[in-house]
Length: 145
Image (tube, rainbow, N blue to C red; front, side):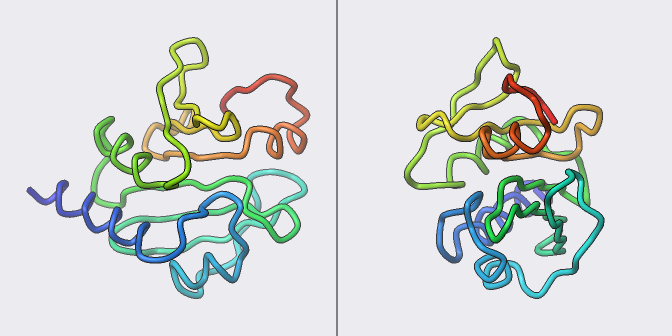
């Protein structure tokens, strides 16, 4: 029952304010998660921030003033596939995520976002802007960061 309660707490926290997620500004992230702290960036050309909220660690990478990548980590246990599906179901109201077997990730119905487990760190879930993160990483094909 504890994992279910933690998942429900995250879903409530994620839906508490605006539903933009990737594409949000730092001010919007602070309104959603609190003050947070600046940390070393995962990608060159970005600023990275981290928050602790409702048993989760949330990290966001911003390019300029806009979020291009978010990571979620449940602090008490590894997120299940059902947890990931539940998170993506409420992540943004204007898109639907479906599994892509070819790319081994979830892709948004607007073809702008992808999500899944972080390669080499299955306990971290990412959601990213495909075009923005590929231009930063120099990758020409959608793949895990």
